[in-house]
Amino acid sequence: MTDPIAASRIAIVVSRFNPEVTDGLLKGALDHLTAKGVTVAPTDVIDAPGAFELPLIAQTLARTGRYDGVVCLGCVIKGDTAHFEFISLGASLGLMAAGLTTETPITFGVLTTYTDEQAVIRSRDDAENKGREAALACHATIATLRRIRREPAAG
Image (cartoon, rainbow, N blue to C red; front, side):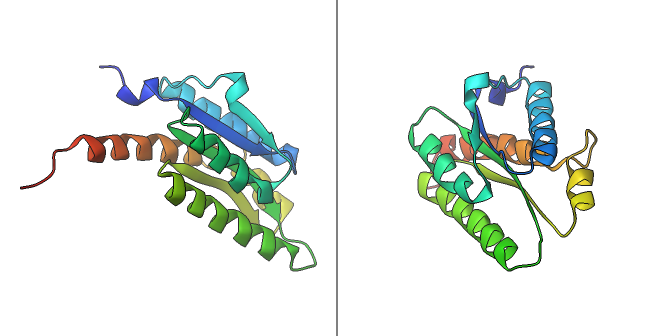
């Protein structure tokens, strides 16, 4: 039986900051979606300058009505200042608000780590890849929302 979600159109927004990590997250997301029969066109992979810009781009994509879901990928590594906290909080709250506002699955595949090593581990080509997990969450949420929206009202 064919996965009904395979016909979904999913965008992936990837931060170009820390590309040695975000490239691995992107590969993990694409590998998962391909395994589920979801084709992501090259034009549906959109670059963002950094994690802070992910919410606006994701919300804009969702509002076009062309996408059933948006996977957001990025990497914020703690440094010596509070910048890490501001960017991490802004990205997470912004992505949550964008998903709630548009009623479109917008998933959080943004690593927030204390070290470069932690980020690399979470972006490797294995089962722990957080890009893969963000794609899985988007795919599963699309399926759940479709089921909820087609069930008849009680009563």
